[in-house]
Image (cartoon, rainbow, N blue to C red; front, side, top):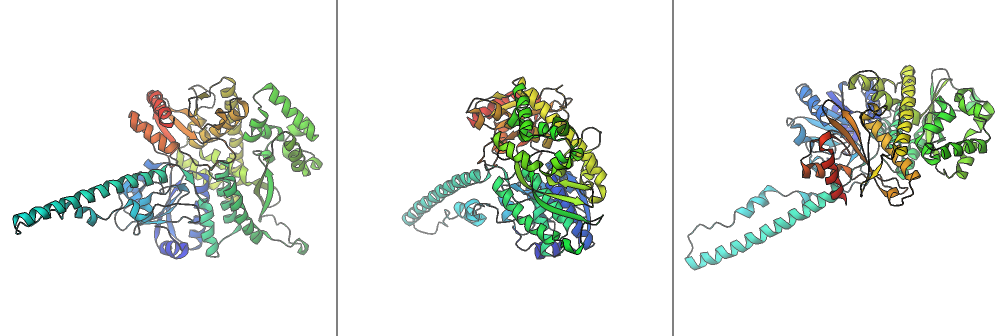
Length: 568
């Protein structure tokens, strides 16, 4: 059931209770969690936080804690499956679900007692009508009754009565079959595509704002949550621009300063600014040259894996009038005169080189005098911390580190994240270059397919879902820029990488085609389920994003054959 008044029906209900917070492993969920933690701290709410990276962990965490808690808050998990069926909770358990995954399971929508959805209804959610997908049990029982007579009437009358009853039964059964066929069709249309709604961090920030408890920190977390959705291609450009506009009003409210009154930045305060940034990853913490070479957008546009592409990059830098010496040193050390006009210079030259979308609306935060961070860079840093494979830390250790990096008292952890992000971005571009140069991307008919062999450099890094998603997105964009085949430009991509060599499993991700008008809806989740069913492939649909699955290596070829015939 959708909650209309978040304050009355959610916050006031849990404020005097012990709460179990179950948080998914993505940046938006972390930001929503930070905002909720700050609110809980204001009101001394007792809570336990458990990170969950998939359905199995969610079930395990629930089983471990269900006896101590009656109130459960789920962030970015739980909306797109039947929760009561999956978790089998007691009747007094109450679930509050704040999740961006769509479509929402219809049972969750129509359950009034135990499931409360903290979801904005202005997102275009076309929920099927109750009567189209549920029938009352009384109606079903009627079908089977109504045909027995008590045998007290005369024979002829009884025969006539039996015939009428029989006709009515046949008619009712026909109606029921038609209703069931229509129900299957309605549910298929509703559940066919996976997509995402409003960022959970923004929903939680709205709650804080309604209660007049919002702060600049909370606003910054909401901004990072939204930016995460944009970087991982979960929302359309239109939705991103609309939500940026909403946050911009809050930024003006929290960060207006009258400079004349000597009210300039103090050493420990925080200031958020709306700005037109560039689609260059981490350029303020790197050299401009490295950033251009390792950002998905520019690397694909220049085709930097080729000699011709490297030449075009040199021409681009020359067109801007930037000396190589300046471009290759750390951004902080560049001449101030160049840095001040850099965005205009880059923008002007980018248009000549066919990169019309290099500018992007974003926000930056400044902590005191020295520390300035762009929202995009923070997302890359937090993802790298969460999926760090260098140390053999368990998922929970990485999760806590990533959560801590969002606090401005832990800037050293954030800086470590930025260094890890540089390694990740380098690895992505090197892998993209080797995949394209060795023709690893194969057109399978209805989709493109690429498999990373065991032994590929950095292959361990790409056994993580978000890293593999970023690699797939970058690879598809680069392939579309490099191929001359017009049909291939419109195809989606299925990418596989080794997950666990000992167990013989691979991780598989499906991403929609790269088109400007793309609605960011992904049909692979449903297709993966059907292909696995029809071939009895040993798959594990454990991720909250249904378009990411795990598969036994030896079942890969029959699974792909089924997927090809299904989508052809």
